[in-house]
Length: 625
Ligand code: ACM
Image (cartoon, rainbow, N blue to C red; front, top):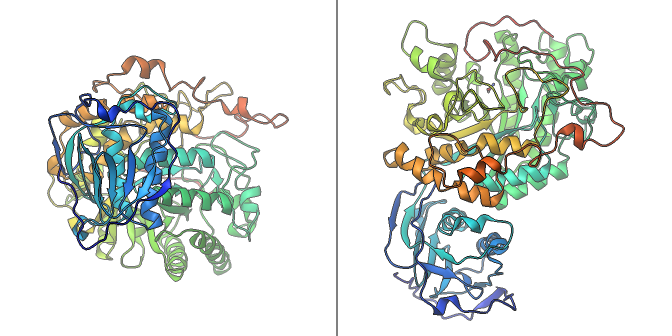
């Protein structure tokens, strides 16, 4: 290992930030020959990764985490690493600040060259120690995620494990392909308590996901408290898909701030989505003046799509809607430090072009007035949007096939219009990046209107060709306008036997159980799509690396789906294991406070068919609510 030489600085005394050596376990593993380390198998695959021969560095209770900085944000990465390592190793590694690197330590150096960029890092490990270098705290955080994967899988366990804790010897140099690598949680159809959102943030951050998109509003629920309109939560949050008469199914301002702060501590930006002008039944149930007849609709707990629209038919109602949007967008923008507010815009077949345009004008002008960048589903591109808006593409194979034919789909038209207006794009093609699509016919949850999405399909796509013809040519979104990728976990059908509507005996997992089963292993696949250069990605290689993640998830208690075609070393454990809705999650009925009416299915409606036409850019006859 080449040790870092730092010229021009005096040899400052070590400052102990945390010094808590365990009293027991004093055997110095460093003095003995280091055990051989397992070869590394990383996800996402780094840009350059050289496994070395020889022994690796073994963490002992006396190993220091040495941060070459006094800045709290950078020292905080050392504290984070110590916290992550503590439960399984049983070591409370001391975090110290220093002005130069040391041997037999984990060194975190945030003073690496600027050319590493915000998220790039290098990592060197051998028997003498580990050095992670970056240009600032964020790059160190990404490098620390790699370091975790260089340790044995058991390091992810929440309880003490035997070790030894040997870091595989490697030289890594790494930086992301795309700056935006997101995941979306549909907290509207199924409400995730704050603790479960935080759990998911940690799981996603481990794969270098840096954006959490919260789909906060939909027909089945409004999930963010707005002081000026309490009905949005007293009424609009009282339902979920399949659940009625709830209370507390929303984030207070304090809850939301807690999520945002937690995400920030994992270098993840929160993007709040307030969907409109469709997907708005929860708002229509809460605010009478948003309806053309000025009467509040009943709250909705069913499974249909395309059932709602803000009233934009006449001037008075357009003014009502505009005022409403101003209030809610302003409130959410104030709570959101990140640059984006997502305005939805999807699935509004009942909106006339002028109604749709009125929504987009009202919502985008308020958003830009609050110094936020407009984000929206690709449909938003059909109307006038501010240059520099970020569109989220969720088309599929049929759209790509239609490019440059006489039957180009509406979706492709909207994307063309967004591009012409100067938008950039996040790629979430539904046939690759929608995590609510079933893996195959045996998947208990989710839908399949965009086909099955087995792991290979979630991995084998190129964002640069997501809006290109099937032969990869003619991309509508130019390469320079692709900001990145996002996996989207909808919760339309987050229950067992989801090909049909639920019945009173249907089993509903806790949201995190559903999320983990549908996300693992596909979220790591999409994380690699967004991080690793296309030329360094290969399914056969990925499949073997992915398999080695399985024991990490088992150790962490993540109920992943041991999908076929991946050589999982812990298959038996995974099958018996964490994914069981009896043990991994409680049914909502069982977990409800006494005295509340039954949850299911007092007002279930919907079709058992998969969404038939909303997603295919074909005209769709849906009655106004
Ligand atoms: C969507 O799937 N309706 C964005």
